[in-house]
Length: 569
Image (tube, rainbow, N blue to C red; front, side, top):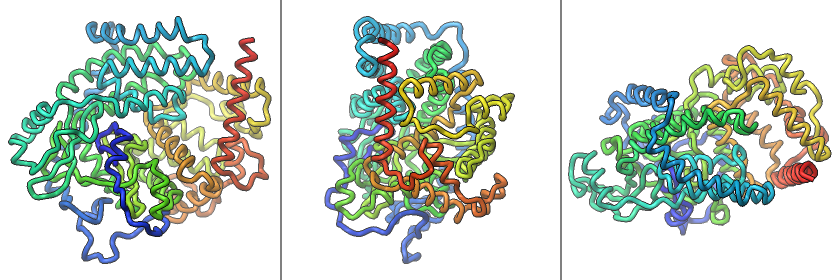
């Protein structure tokens, strides 16, 4: 089981997975499913949130004292961000000196010794050096590394792989310090709250650590405790990062498109909110509410305790299940892992497109699959929230993609902030060749493929394209779910899955989508030819599995590598 703390450890996941789950055949969890068959036995709070059917306590949002003024608290917390990342003539000198003393030798060692070892070995060396440096620099940099570690597809594979090692290599605080934080925030001795509080944490993360406990009433819980003094250190580190970020703009195409200042702004917004566990507890309630409202019962959220939530302490329901990557045991217990993945993707897209609220940091440590096939979501410190303008832009982007409306997609990206408002849509479509037949990259020579990518990147940079911070979270999550296909549904026909998902939204939400974007998906069928073209596939391709996609990626990767070698020669 994951630690429910934010930066989970694969070892912790394995330790708490229910090892003897009964084997059973499970119904396909491909959409909304009903609460328990006997309504009289269902916990009353299932009406307000997607929770478990065995309730340790009832969630009554209006009676939770820690929620008083929660909206104002979120506004005040976010209002700190511009001040924390404001333009400075110089960063905090002492922290900057420490940062330079750690990062400087790491980068210099790579530059002098390993930079010319070849592209892959060079990236691996630099990634390893950065991971070690981030670990030495402490919680803020460890947290940044952990966010990078779940950004497969956004960041180099070598960097992602190295940063994953930061998930479970954070030394815990002493039990004395943990006890002190709990007693200061709850204003009473630990033994007046817990019948038992484990001395050893089940997970130690960058911002907090998690201990299993038993309340005096007998309920099993987990307790998330913030590390002492972490808040002040985070603020100093943000000052250093925000001073450095503008210096990276335009240095390399990847950095320019990734928009380093926006990345730091996103990081600041998330980590500042993570420093107040009352906001995280409210995130739990909000996402649970969204899923209950949309009728989704394929995911569950742990209940935050009605009283035991403060800025630095969060007591919540203890959930168990199979680790996300424990596919073998899931299947042996009768769980249809392909159906689990399919249902998870639908639930995620519903939250984004219809409500603008979604879990912002999906990775294997934050997801458990319970014996009945439901997915337990953990760690809500990073929760995406789109305003109405951005939500509608994303909805138009998705509808435009499924109906092959290129203009609608470009305009949606403009509304999202990925393209400047003064860009002429027709000119951009022409310059990028979006109105021309798509070439299959696997049929191109290494030189043709490299030239094509170079021209597209040059054109995008010329138009001022960037990846807005909200879109970064969305892309990161979708890339994670896409990557999960490899283990959970490697033989599933991806083209058919896309059609199934489009049909689900047309059937369940067609009327609302038609009102909001002016296109009725019930009347405009999905354009699978356009989907094939976007993947560089010929129109005669009828099925596409993950294995086939991987083969295509390998071909493209080899040709790009060959092109780089020829260029160096």
